[in-house]
Amino acid sequence: MKYSGLLLASVLPFAMAYEYRVGVGKDETTGRKGMGFDPSVIHPSAGDTIAFEFRSGVHSAVQSSFDNPCVGNGGFNSGVHTVSDDLAVDAPGLPIVRVTVNDTEPLWFFDEAGGLCHQGAVLAVNPTAAQTATIFKENAALPPKPASSSSSPPSTTSTSTSTANDSATRPDSSASGLAVSGWLATAAGVVLGGLFM
Ligand SMILES: *[C@@H]1O[C@H](CO)[C@@H](O)[C@H](O)[C@H]1NC(C)=O
Ligand SMILES: *[C@@H]1O[C@H](CO)[C@@H](O)[C@H](O)[C@H]1NC(C)=O
Image (cartoon, rainbow, N blue to C red; front, side):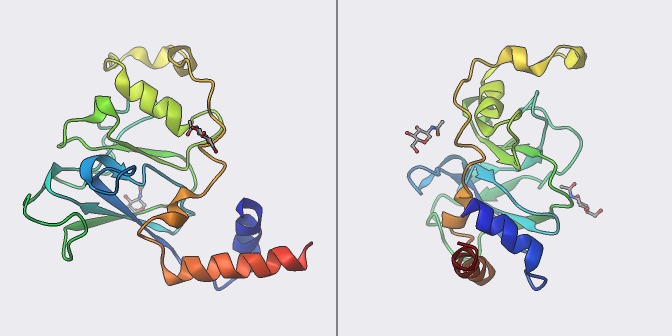
């Protein structure tokens, strides 16, 4: 589906901007309230939107950097959102803050207000083969780097050998944010895939 998706993006002029709904304070493995972002990896295109939707507790989505995942980089900051514990995980009317994706460069975020960045409350947007979501999460588990550490190569901090999954799929397509345009894209991709067999 990856290739048909890429093909689709280049041949279908009517492809709509897509909104990636990302739960903050929602465990992506259980689908319940919990730590982190659901999903924790997305691959939006330029012009798409990320909609951060805040779950119970105190959370924020703050832009950081690959090397220093748990420190804001002065970019996007959703502000702090407090949601009652009484609300169900997918209750209607949860607070949402949107940010537009302007290109396909990687973007990195963490839940600053939630305070669990070092345990993995991070979001990777358009990770690359060199800068994977897995290594980003490993970087988050490390002590914060001093501000002057930019001269040290980031790869020395990683021991990961498992990078294949991060970019091989579009996990967002299975997330709650799947919209009609996404369904159309999938359906059209199948048709195109068939045409190009
Ligand atoms: C994209 O551009 C808009 C308008 O300049 C800006 O508000 C937004 O923060 C940018 N998105 C990112 C992820 O920087
Ligand atoms: C990669 O995917 C395989 C199965 O497709 C899974 O067993 C493995 O745990 C995944 N690795 C990561 C790092 O997600």
